[in-house]
Length: 327
Image (tube, rainbow, N blue to C red; front, top):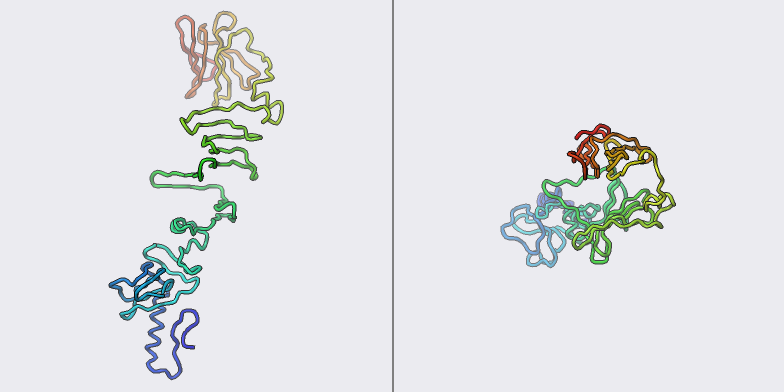
């Protein structure tokens, strides 16, 4: 045997003269391969190479490198030396700024062999599937299992869902136990829709052309029971106490108080009225700030504001809690 099996380093022979020549040859190759760094990939020898400079020889090499494609070329002792590369060898490419590995007869980004999504692998199409905290599969090329995820940028950032063409969809599915609860996305028409509930009732549609917004009517057949159906379609109304004798005109919900507030054009005695309820069933009456015909009420920034459509003098009144009103 005249050289090592893996790296092809020359071996000293028995009674060999000038052993230092062989030893230095082996040291030179080791110096190139340990912590290996190449300038890049090329098809022909560059001018002005310096001692120890190495390259990956690209396809269709010519000149001094002819027939060396796929191997390493090392400038040593004033000439180019061929170092045959084996499957699995790894070197750092200064030109690519990444670690590359010999795989399947070609040099590829090291990350692509691990399923890591590197920019080089994405650009070349060599990127494999990626699983973070869980295994990816043929259907799900990217899988993340965790409680939080962060996408951060020093400036603007954009997350794109790109469908292949008209007729295809791009959507986000919200699921429980892998069963879909709601779907937000674009279907074949390109309109943005929100679908939810049993049977995926379309609740919202935004037109692709013009941005027209439509709230879809609820379909009775999409609800699982009569109670739910009646609530959505406004059926099965029942009379409640506390509101008799007044012409109720305006209604507002106070999220911070958990109260409904209604105002009336008449309390039955010629004056305005206010009523509060936590559930819409039980109501309590309160005095308005004046006898005006109160027509509308709204809440914002912690204050109810009621407006009158007729009356003497007063046209607005306010209240923080719906009980005590001031003009």
